[in-house]
Length: 305
Image 1: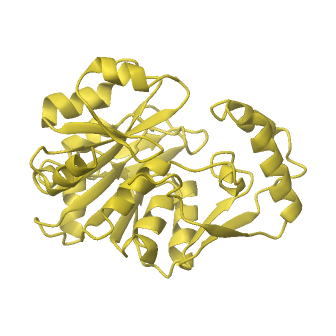
Image 2: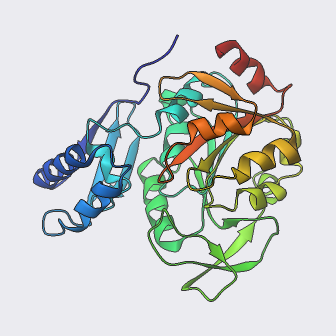
């Protein structure tokens, strides 16, 4: 059965209710602009919206914190906005499966908060984030949730222990670089991570991979991990008309690729024309899921098609 609204209910904790009203109004006025109008409007409202902490308090007691001035996460305070409901559908489908959640490119840790929550099955979750500033908010969310998920400040890469630069800019746009950069970060492979956390070879895993264009490199460092029971959740951005990461998954891994829409429909993707039909905007990222054709994950997904 399709779920119209899979997003978990929450209340909002803030010291500035007026600012929440401003943000909600801005989102309502700019809805449908793929976030561009909203980001522009938020930059013009500094006197109403500042960096104070806002917390979402979910029904099961889980908490998620972010600065209200952040134009990416502040949309969550609007009742008109649902954040990536397709991923929420996926997590609900596998709630009863004992899997480990690896959040590679975790940002502030939203998905690790949910995966480790009672509402989604209390999964073991490991959140990996490269940026020091972003990691500080991730750490805050880890503390708010009684350290129930693990955190690592690293860049996911195909080699361990390499010091790379991390570009400047908003946290949703920062990326690894070999050029001179304002921040340095040390790399880790997903295979090494699995060893470090004593992850058993037969443990099912959902890997959420969002590393700003370095997905293929990150997967190259997961050769052992990808031989197991893995469901990969990844972004193929609308600004990439060649669909680089999906081609990599097809050609290098030989996995099946599916798209889950906002209503929870599973659509298996077979060729480029289907990707072109789905990726209609160059301004947003599109989430896909991939797994081996004989995996436990694929068998359950097949029953949903």
